Image (cartoon, rainbow, N blue to C red):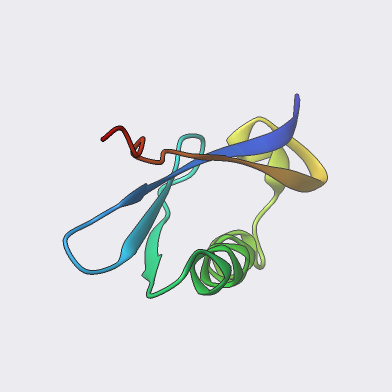
Length: 74
């Protein structure tokens, strides 16, 4: 059983996009803060009423978020 749900955040054309690896959740936001808030809400809604064990997760798993940023090389 896993303690964490891994998510990857990257910059889209106009928004940041967050994708979970363990559960089928994708969301977006205009800012990183908004994206993370949307991710927490979306994962919560996705798991609501479900048994986390069905996804290989412990009860109340945490989110581990990796953010991809472009370097500012001149």
